[in-house]
Length: 111
Length: 469
Image (tube, rainbow over all chains, first blue to last red; front, side):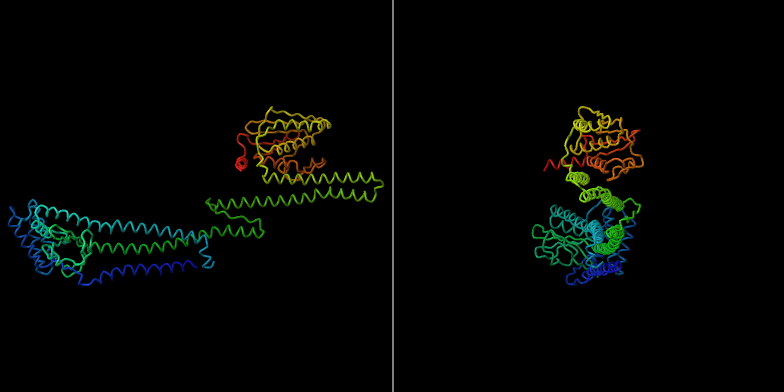
């Protein structure tokens, strides 16, 4: 058996196996039905509004004016949520709230 | 080579072993890398969930349900990584707090990680969640969005799989290279030995000059072939010598008997002719016996009879045996030795070897000369026999121990040319040597035997085996 034939056989045997394995995993991932998918409720415009309200409340409760970064993040987050970029807006509002909570000595909102 | 013969080929096996080892090594490395990277991601997720659960359980213990709800909402509100998933359900599995729309139906058991498909702002994602059962019939689900990690893990897995393919290809190519190297190296040896088997004894295995294991094998084979060639030349020479040297006495005996049959007048004449022929035939028998003895010695079978011996009594016996003969020829025979000369070997063979040397010395010594026999044990055992005869020229000494060889100075004296061959064979058998030197005048023959405290290792091993048996 010539060396070239051996190499070709190995390539023809191994390559499809690897392709099937990698492609198969992608297909399996895409084939999951919608019935099994859970909706995450913290990615909605309503939640965005909720976060904006909390940021404002925290700002009013703070003893000192908030850092510029907080106000910028809050405004940007609200603007993004209004324009449909919900997840991006929520991330910025969360960041603003986190800065406020830790700026304030880690004070937790007790209700 | 046919496909079936391919699998029997040693070169193919070497190549296959190389490919298998490379493949296994690469697979082990890939599995380790996968565990270290993708596996690490999974372990980090699990640790984060457990740490989260620990914190929440402390809040539950401190403040009960209200505190837990507040903590969940705070954590969600401050989840800057945007990956936290919580769901607090009551006994009826209704939502109390958290950011999932409902309890996942397939999450039935506490303790293990579940993979969950989630929808985030219209985009599908993947989460790992774990169930915790709380007192009062409450159930808590804690999880993390692992979509990015899953994508990274997928990329890693694909890369490693393709890498294994490349390694498989490299292993195959490497195996072919190893096999061809192996075959090319052995082809040289195989071609040479085939030529030798066909009768061309002049062929030798070619050395590459690298000094590696294949060159060492080639050198050993070439040494073996040299020895075989020398032995075959020796056999040829002995056969020729036997034919030449024995033809004369056989012819002489036949001629005498034929002459007696034609010309003998009386029974006494006939008897005398028969006796002369008998003497000739006895000489021929003696030559054959000597040849057989030399062959037996060279075969090494006598090593099993090796034991500690004392040379001194042998020298006294030989002095008594040859003293009278020497005296009749006007030769002085002197033996000088310590009272005890220990050695290790076959007593009969050593006795015969010394006797042959003394016999030669007495035969070739002129009247009035002295034959001296000495034995010393300075490290090795040296038995030296010197004479004052014609000696052996330096140019002939190398051949003097060949069978049937007779030097120019020995052609006029009786003998078969086997005496020194036997002495040399005895010396080799004992791991010693026979040295021939110029005694100026005459010959100095030194039979060297190993130190009895450190005998020939071959002989010792055989003796040990003999004792064990």
